[in-house]
Amino acid sequence: MKTIKISLVVLLLALVITPLTGALYSPDKDGYALAGEQFIGTSVRVQGMGGAGYGVKGYHDSFLFNPANLAGSRFKLSLPSITVTAHNVQSILASGAIDEFVDGGDDGMIQGAMDLLGTIKKGYGDFLTTDISTTFTLGGFGLSIQAQERLMTYNKKGTTSQSKLIAQLTAAVTLGYGLNIKAVPNILDIDVGVSVQAVYKAYSKTIGAVDLIDKIDDDFDAGKFFLAELPMAAGWGVPISIGANLNFPYGLSLSLVAGNINGNYKMATYGSLNDWGEEVFNTRWSDDPNASGAVSESEWALEVPWTLGFGFTWAPTFLGNIIKPTIAIDVVDVLALGGNTGEALTRAFLEQTRLGASVRLLSMFDVRYGLNQGYQSLGVGFDLLVFHIDAAYYTREYGKSIGDKPIDALSLRFSIGSR
View (cartoon, rainbow, N blue to C red):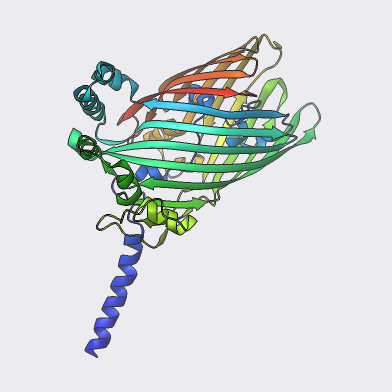
């Protein structure tokens, strides 16, 4: 009987411990919350408009925010575009880190790195994001291939020694289709669309930034560290988006988007990049043994909730190609408003609301302005034949409430092909 009791206890412990260890680096663990966000590639155009864009048509990436925007789409091809986003811009400029890097020398580089770490404040944040994408649309169909590098930050106590980095790589392929329905001639037509996205994401265990600098200063073996010593989590998901636009005269439209349906990821934890390569590609990238304690774990689920967004857009065309104004107002997650009343409802509405405006001049220049959770954004675009440059300066809230931890960002996008 005693043996049976011991066996039952061991079995119960195994059932409890296995899911916990399997989710060793899951977003509910301290330091990994940003890894659980829905994947949305950086759109400099949308960021310049405060994050609003459900009903804004005519751009190569419009269907990535609302698949209904594919209805009636013409041929558009954006060859590999590159977007680079630097975060915490004001703090970095004020830190003096850039001057240290410019001065050069080992001491200057190390001091510059320490100055950069000093800009990482308590809580979560982003440091540097790079996006590469190619998009194609024709006759209601759309295809987009995206890859994103995202260097995230976490600081538990707000001191430089507590600064940690998390490196994340994401690849996504999105296929969508949209069609237009003539409901009431000259009064109402309806765009409907659906998109399916295959996403694979991988992110590292938190890296102590100061420890990493110390390693670099002491004959750092980068290959061994990143291939055999740094644990990681990786997995895939297939989210679906469904959208609709109700189009009225004078450029008025109402949009409804159900996004990230079936958005959960099947994840696994790996002791190193070598272990991941051996599991996925049946090969190891180096012969270095794994670091002590770096072991692979069982599979686990990363849950990302679906959202229901609502948008209003006014894009009149009566001025032809000389001036094309657009005004957009989006509530990105109506479900988040449920259960709130009074001041709580007002605060939740502000947190979910995005407002944006843009003016296109002579089919060459774009000037954009927006409000995202009350934070202002500015954007510009310039088209020269098939070459396009877009820039946006904006702020994103990383705290639990508006005003807790706003971080500014500067995004630059360079592309060839359709805008």
